[in-house]
Length: 184
Image 1 (cartoon, helix red, strand yellow):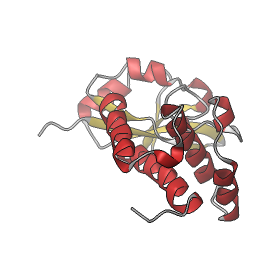
Image 2: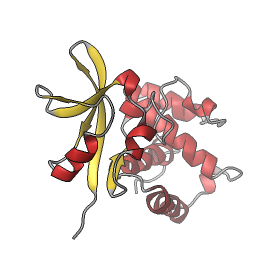
Image 3: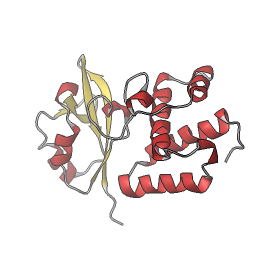
């Protein structure tokens, strides 16, 4: 079975600076490819390859890696540095998308005291869900419609398992917590 090489990203502190860490399972050919990225460095203490935050450009990194490398761009660490499909850092991501997340959704996130990062992710992905179903009453969307929406994201955008779960949870929050429907 030929599995794709997988690189995940995280934003961390290293020697007093913000960096973007690239983490992946040991693979000689992948290491050789990563070494071609300008300004990339190895951190013995963090056990990862990294770029200073201000030097990190996802498109540049992608261009220098083989096509069989899967880049997990779902990490919020990338949100401020690229234009991939990850949550934005603003307080009102739904407005940036030109959407209106129901106030009850936002209020319940606050009432349940979800963390700032969870709220950001839920608002972003639920906003994308709303945009996909523009013109339809959210209350009338069926489970089959939601499953098809997720299946299309998996097939067309190759979203990660983590991103898939975040999207599912953001959608379930609306139907189960806001609308009070039965758990599915």
